[in-house]
Length: 117
Image 1 (cartoon, helix red, strand yellow):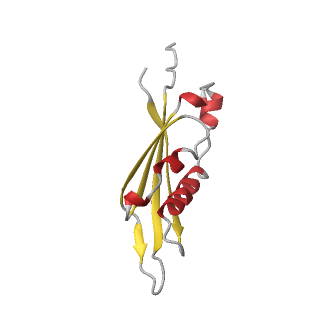
Image 2: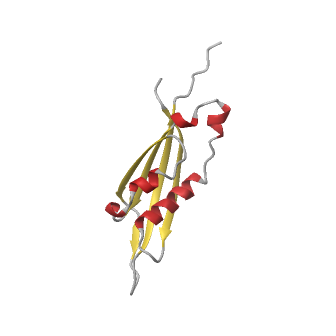
Image 3: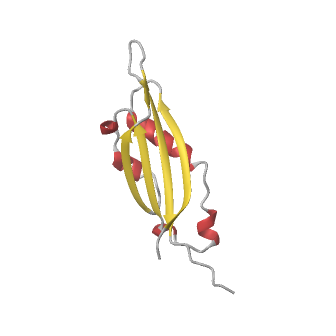
């Protein structure tokens, strides 16, 4: 059976004063996760550990995101994290830039097909 995408959520997060790209990314993940529910998994009797979670983070400086910290946020599933150029830095006089991150979370699962008839 091939895993199918069953959930796609987006979120945004920021770090207004510290210039911390990982913190902004974690907030974007939290925003996206709070918009979804995994009732589908429980109602179909699917094992949460088998779901595939594909996470994409967009920030202006991808090299400054700790992808391992992002991966550890998810309590179950096989998690992949990809950090790409995106998001937004807002210059601030006399301090670190305000950092805005965007996140997309795609969840894939092997969903059993209904029997015909």
